[in-house]
Length: 239
Image 1: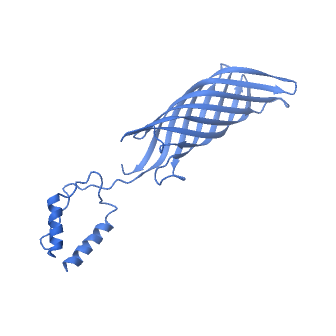
Image 2 (image 1 turned 135 degrees about the horizontal axis):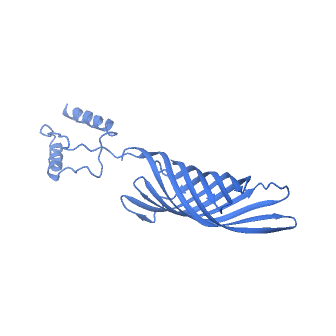
Image 3 (image 1 turned 120 degrees about the horizontal axis):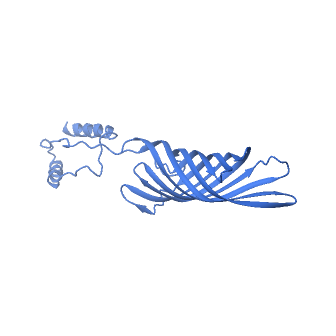
């Protein structure tokens, strides 16, 4: 009867493992109690074994899931615009200053479950070239946050590389004229993650193909930017 009771108790503990389980904070069983249980089992005398609840109930730590990522960044760099046709071309160099707001969502695609290093994102930016020229842009992209290759890691913070690619549409304003364009962007850099915050330093290569208002004239631009930003990850689940 006692053995059946012990088996039933073990089954009930197994069913409750999702709520109450051992963690790194759970105190181990004292050696004296362990020896008492072993001796009682060998002597087939389990009547004197008593079970007591831990003085502090500790819950197992489960994973967190991402709800939304909200970020902002600022960048500066150099842009070169190339206008050309069959007879020739000319180029114009600009200094670029940009501000961007980003929304994202983290997923686990082909990595370890619940790690969520993959991010889909959408961003809006305004890019200032000079007092007469600037463009606003909407991008849709994918970012790989390589947390599985940390360059520095502690219990509270991680430094890791990132790589992203995005496509989008933009509108260039020059004096009173406005033209549309297709854009693409490749970004690589470092992210320092601490709790729910991410601090970013990235190098951005940007290309645009503008729909010039005069038929037969091509209009393209490319730029290299240094970008600084911060993200906040809204999470739910146990911590």
